[in-house]
Length: 324
Image (cartoon, rainbow, N blue to C red; front, side, top):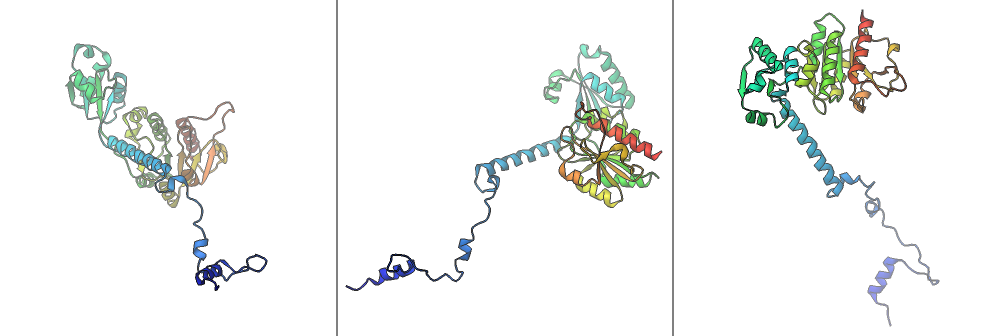
């Protein structure tokens, strides 16, 4: 009986078999199947795989961060209400910008000497005095403790990072700018602004995102220095530092693991951008890579690190000494 032609064709595709039952070599494909054999490369991370739970979580986290950034930006673009008797009096003494003073109606508030002083200081500056009921002020302050008084502070008018260079060129002194990388405590920002003004810096630069801005608390801590020294906001701090380098400034970072001690550096008399990092985390990777040199301040081994405003003050003093 003859062989079935279909079966014969299949056996030819599978490869011929020798009499001993072993397969012999078959003809190749001539490279036609090369792409199918090449594979698809390395498996991407879970957060990059479409439809993977890790990707959905990463996208949700990114949306939440974007929402927080937008909310903070909207808050910074709106007037701020500074609350509390001591904070309001201190802010008025420091002559921070303000647009109105709110006082809750009632005899109990009028007998407090701090409120009396706040009303007097506001009147001397020609600020409107607005009396409101307690229920209304509770709503305005979102239920926060207000002690019957609040000072309305307008949004801060930030400079552009390039404005600080223009100011330096017109000052007759080598440029000195302080850049703050991701600092989130307004008191630290205010303290650095105060030190920068004391040691003749031309301004302070802060990032637009993931960093504190010039809030009323920062104004108050600066003790009025923020009225004399411009604070600029950079969309991207690393790029702003690159622009300063192009303009001839040395970018000098501060970190506990710096390359050399502060007193070993001999470039403080030159045009300079002093860069300080965030509380706890220090300089971010991109900002650190943008620094020409990173210095450390020698401290006792038992002390973990210096507060960012203290470190900035020490470095600014060293700059002032080198420029005398």
